[in-house]
Every structure is written in structure tokens, then in C-alpha cells.
Length: 272
Image (cartoon, rainbow, N blue to C red):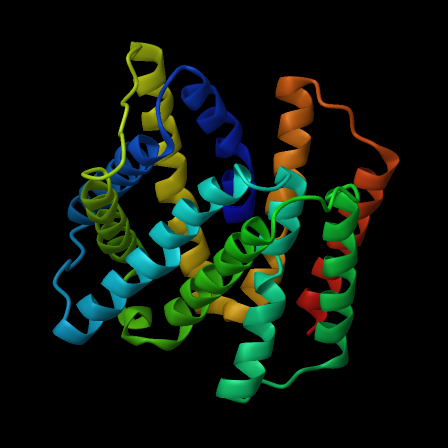
């Protein structure tokens, strides 16, 4: 469910940016909305929002390194190399998570996980459409997003943040992203939406972001970072389908084959 939400709202983001808003402004608004909504939900459910110093440190690192850095670098990568290539490199993070969990936390690297890695990488290569042109810098920036998001998934599973309620976690991580965005906006031009409809779109994105991060937090807590990372690979498939429906993009046989391989990788991830 989280990956479906993650796959839908980029199409809404695209329309807001097309109306003149800058990416850093979107980060500030949408993550701010997500953080405030999660706080309201937590208070309404009478959750204890107090955290220890160790938990707060983990949550701030997860927000700034895992979420803000990933979003910021993805926006840069999109300007340097083809979007399909960025997606392919970024979604190598499930493989990185799987390798890290095996190397550092002694999770067994099963045959099913290996099959999942092979199918997912092959599927992403097909989704990229073979368009591998672009600068070395763009490739490096896209690769950095895979590492930063791997940090997010692993830290969510293996640090003191795991002990915090998933919805309370959304509040702290998203507010740290908002704070980081405000700091960066001092040096970067943050152009906020001008039209009321764009602000409404930002609120919708924020609400979806709040729900998506809550769901991925809950998913990691239940099945671990490795399995959750692979199942979250339905995100690029969802994004492709939504883009095709909203922007009338043609779905090529290569893209459909890529989607089939990614779905196959989810089967092996679930079996592991």
C-alpha cells in the first residue's frame, strides 16, 4: 500500500512544479503537511509523542539523511540523466539493503532473495528502456540516492527509532525534513505555489506522504527492512501506470516486461 501511494503522488508533484513551484518548496510544504497531520493523528489517538534522546537522534538522522537527502538528490539527478535511468539506479536500494542486512546483521541470504535481486535488477533495466546516456555526475548522484534510502530502510529497522510508534515517527522524521528544506532554501530559490489549486495539490501530496511513510514504517516493523524494500518495488510500476493514464504515455512491450519481472521479484521476496 505504501509503494502504491509513493508511486501515485509524483504525478501530482509534476503538475505543481509545472505551475511554477520549485522542488525545494514542495519538500518544505508537503513534508510539513505530513508532519503536522501525523501529529494531529497521534494526539487524537492519545499517543505518547515523547521520545528519548537516543530515539530523537535516530529519528533526526533518518529524516535528514534518509528522506531529505534522497529527495534532494533525486531532483538533481533528474536534471542530469534520463528519468528511467535515475529510477533504475535508485531502486537498486533493495539489493543494497539485502546485502547490508546479510553482511552486518547476519540475515540469511536465501536462494529466494538472490532470485528476487536478479529479477528486480533485470526488470528495472527494462523499465529504463535502455536509455543509459548521461553524465558520470548524474550516475553518481543517482547512486547516492540508493545508498541514502538504504540507510533510511535499515535505520528504521535497526536503530532506537524502531521502538517509536510508526505515526509518531512520521511526525519527527517529516518535521526534520521540513527543517532541512528551510535551511537549504536560504541558498536556493524556493518558489511557492501561486494558485489555490496547487496548494490543494500540495495538501493532498502531504496527506498521501503521511500515510505512505506510516505504512512503510509499519511494514518494516512487521517483516523487516529487506523484505519491505523488495515489496516497495511496486512503486516504479505504479508510477509508470499512473503516468500512462494521466499523461497518456505509451507503455512499450519492454516496459511491460520490466513490470512483469519486478512483480516476479516480489513473489520471491515474499517466499524468503
